[in-house]
Image (cartoon, rainbow, N blue to C red; front, top):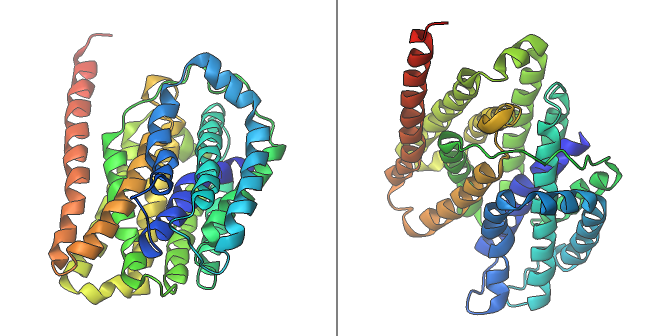
Length: 356
């Protein structure tokens, strides 16, 4: 579970928590303090997978001190935020929160490569990790910015992990346009309840419900047994199947909200989006376990998850009078799915046609 917590803490806690601070409580992009938040949210996930082998080995050797630094930065950063006090013009706050974000994204990336190095391990801890994430969002009802503290608490177990120096070496990053577009779509819909309620932090239990449902999906994946997991490895149909299920469920919630905008506050909507989020995470982690160039490190997917949250916030503020406009969030995922399945099918036909 320690590794899964390290994997999930950046996209699900840090990105969500910081975007709540910037979107709900204010952002000052007229000064350097505002732009510092962009570095771990958008730039670091792009740069990390492109680092050289020597840098990868050095980062892995420093994984424990980095995790300890993240715990310290998280405690310092969260202290003034405990009761929802977010100083958008504070340079000290932006430095500590962004420093925590850099540690968060690096440790999460190293944890993904460590998971990929052990494809035979069961995904049982994933459900527990998602349940812990749900607890932090439940507490957001009273302490809206507590996901930022949750990042530090999820980094704490990483201090005791045995980090394998060569796990990140030779790992290539595969492109997953469908999963990235799906992450954008799921995040865009998941964040709507937060932006709609704003300073009314009753969105906390709603988001917590979504993560509980995602944990149930992860539990179902575990209960499916080793046979299904073994068949899934190396077979794109499993990844696509989980992704398509997530796309259909998110689409159903999106259409229902377009027809009845008040549905955005209904717990059933969050439960549906939680099922979709669970399908997305299962698809991503299954693809990570695929050896060779078809595997992924997950950074691109998490980056588009963050972009989806940010774009949905802009939509909520500017275009909320056009509820059917949310259906446009599905278009990238639909196009990417059709594009991926087309070349994959043609390649499969060529393989069948080749003489053995």
